[in-house]
Image (cartoon, rainbow, N blue to C red):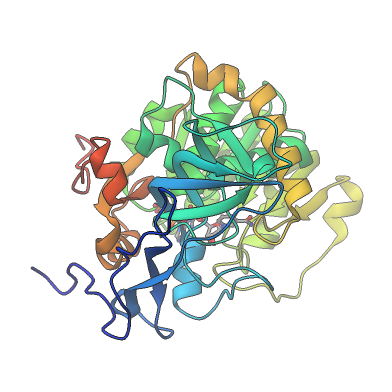
Amino acid sequence: MGRFGAITMDASHHSPAAQDSGSLPNRMTVIRARAAGGPEVLVSNVAPVPKPGPRELLIEIWAAGVNRPDVLQREGRYPPPAGATDILGLEVMGCVVDAGSRTHRFGHGDRVMALVVGGGYAEYVAVPEGQCLPVPATLTATEAAGLPESLFTVWFNLCMRAHLKSREWILIHGGGGAIGTMAVALSAVLGCHVVTTTGSARKALSLRSLGAAQVIPYTQNDFWVALHCLCATHGGFDVILDMIGGPYFEKNLGLLAPDGRLVQVAFRQGSSLQVDLAPFLYKRLTFMGSTLRAQKPAAKARIARSIERRVFPYIEAGKLCPVVDSVFQLQEADRAHARIDDPEHFGKIILVTEKGADQGLRPVPPAVHGW
Ligand SMILES: NC(=O)c1ccc[n+]([C@@H]2O[C@H](COP(=O)([O-])OP(=O)(O)OC[C@H]3O[C@@H](n4cnc5c(N)ncnc54)[C@H](OP(=O)(O)O)[C@@H]3O)[C@@H](O)[C@H]2O)c1
């Protein structure tokens, strides 16, 4: 075994085996960060199984997605919002095992995927019913677990806010990550002309198969020149999705077409800068940004309903599906975090629980993608 291995149970906690008088256990295994740091700070310990509120479902988790915000939380740079659990994890797939008195759509035994405010690296989670979606028959359980965080983020930002339309030109920075792969695939099925950047020539092939018309390596010094050359042929990008910020901001403004929209979902290279804002006036540009996690359950429920109406037809037709990079056991969350820090990862990293294993879900080593 390498530097990371199966996480051992924190010795200060008891076994999760105790059951209450019903069929559900009253304690469960969860993964938390014991301190700010690298993947090795992740520990397994025991927490009470949550009780669903009146408008909540209790989900027995089969699989959970690993996301960049989980890494930032582990590093102590992204604390959970007030009132949210410190158990990691923002998305799950599983089976409903209990429902609050004011839920109306899903019931015991239904398979759902859900966006959660935290608590996904666990065996059970209570989640507002509005944040749950049925699992389309075209998705495997692990694909479904990796869908909500990226799809909610991408759909909300690109379509509900930036009003991305068919035949528009879109530039997606960082196409190889979880957000990037979903943004490329979704924009392509919507009929947009998709250009993306990536740090790996080998990922470029996979991004083309997801629907990118052009893939520009951001590791080349002249990649901004290459992007400007592309703009010369069509007049600029209608929408740019950026997660880098810092020095990218002003360069993005230069690439936007008149009435273009710059959508910011993260600032990996800084959020403070001095910039000439004149292009906002003479090109009538719009700048927008958002974070998903901090939004209220009602807002997340609106995104869920919009996705169900507008995106599910593509998923159910087999035209849209998250890219799964690799699958680890819940107890290997440290290895999953080491993988997301590996620039070779492409798409989503998933954790499976023991209940997921009972359903036939198995670890899958990091993919080679046929590169
Ligand atoms: N605002 C929100 O609601 C929200 C929600 C979720 C995530 N996020 C943020 O969105 C970002 C992406 O999340 P993720 O889950 O997709 O993370 P991820 O899987 O780690 O992907 C990040 C990607 O960034 C790309 N990248 C790194 N350096 C780059 C550079 N200099 N230029 C262009 N691309 C570069 C890499 O692309 P390649 O692999 O192609 O090289 C990498 O795949 C994170 O910062 C995350 O915190 C925001």
